[in-house]
Length: 332
Image (tube, rainbow, N blue to C red):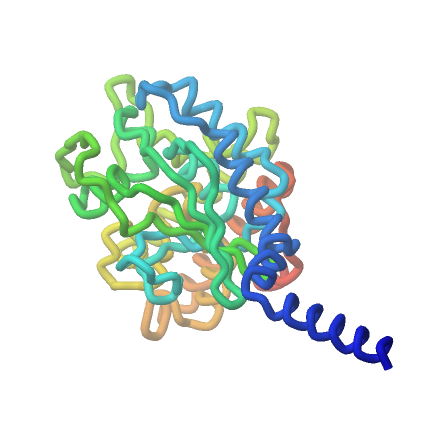
């Protein structure tokens, strides 16, 4: 009898402990997804620590190189990857925020590298979504050609970059789906003011194309044998896109109010759309609403799009980026 009572008491104690909220939180904190989130956060912070001089070019380049090579980050990022600004504090639904689609390599090397990180990552779980909070400081004193496009075309956007206090990364089912600049801002942070002259691209005093970070020579390693090919393919494709007014809808000012926005106006940022353009041209959906009426002109643009998609795949594959079979199939 005493043994039976002891068994019952032991069972009740174990059940009570299992239902204790503290134990539930502990279980979540030690789950593989939580551990992955912490690992990602710590590796990003270590790759790009805060330096006192925000125009330190060596630190910027070092950060970009390290983020490019971070294996955990590369293998976890979803393609395409969504990036934007949080519309309001606490809104963690990517679909409810204005975002832009990017190729994973482009985002981490060209966009993520404009930030510096400090402290420790904070990891928060909401149902199946894990939010990684990274304290940030923006490199707002770089040369204007070091930014993916003139963010200051919109003062709201430029200030969001300069004064946002956190980067929010969204992990779901072991995949990083996207990131947002937090709506929590520090209005006391010093800002750098630029006046936009209306040009998305320009040549500097030495005749070099700007922004230089949008070029394939910045994105890909010097040993990549496909750089010249993908650049030539993009240039030929882009000229014909302009003839059909496609760039109007696919520029940073987002005249067509797309969400997510799809960029075609810059070489490396167009990579995220390289297969989608092939599909839409084939289906007579680009440009909207009925595509290109002239069959010969449509076929020409389609062939240019296919050449760009193929060259982009080759260049990215050389860097170790994943090219899915569905992507290749959509371009054939």
